[in-house]
Length: 373
Image (cartoon, rainbow, N blue to C red; front, top):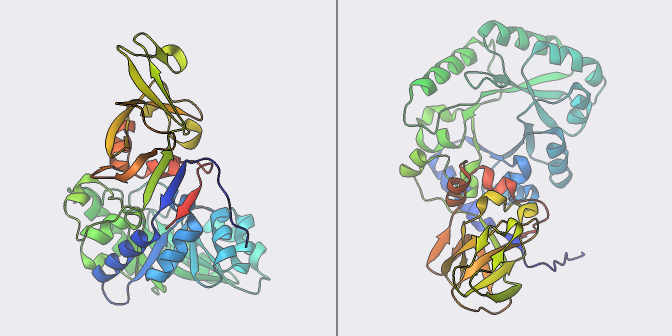
């Protein structure tokens, strides 16, 4: 087996034991026989889909979910047995590949099933489908009982197609106000009841619902996404978590150059930072091509257990930090994660970027190697 060698010190470190513990803790919370669908779309939220999928399955997940056909094929190439569900829309041309690779597709319109039928009629394996109910997200899914029943009947009448499940997605499960959430629940339950025959898997609980909503909403399976990676879906959910989450992702680098500036010297493109007195500057080999985007200017990093700010404009491949003294080349820099008694969280980055923590690991590009512990 060839071992990958990395020469640049910038790396993302993913703690697979943290991911497993987050799965184990959720499993303890669930009713007996409720399955965990580990959501590993978007390269497992930037953590690495294959490694995370393996860890999640070992910890008790029984099924995997992705967003696109290409993600599903990549996972299937590494895992022969577990069910894989594509949560998003798939082109009808992918239907025969899904049947061959035993990948479950999302169905949300009768026309799609009719168009896919010629592609899979002669396949050895049936094409398994989960009906998506749009109970209030406004993305994909049937929006009425009649649409649902029409789709159900089309599936029943189509050769080599099998209805395996039905699901929905909640828009406000991570909020304290349950009014919109309750309306979505009522519509989805109405749809499930309307089916002439209940399929193998009914699932509606996303991460927030799994963690803080009524147990009866677990149905046959729950979809475990953001908190599998140790991140809370929202500040509200974080305030009432049933167990502590263990963050799995750290972003690290090293100082590659240290210099002393004199008062009046500038740093970076546009000379936007000017030293007001003599000071030390350290250069870190990480930049916006790695996902440390320019809006993170001023964000602090951890060096020697202390917070130090990024100064000047972040470059494509490098950024500079203000140092209190001269540090040695090779001094460890933590951009996300714990160092000493302090930690920089993805929530902190998200606040700086005026976004949500989900986005933070996803923007760390493939150029940054993922190392697993």
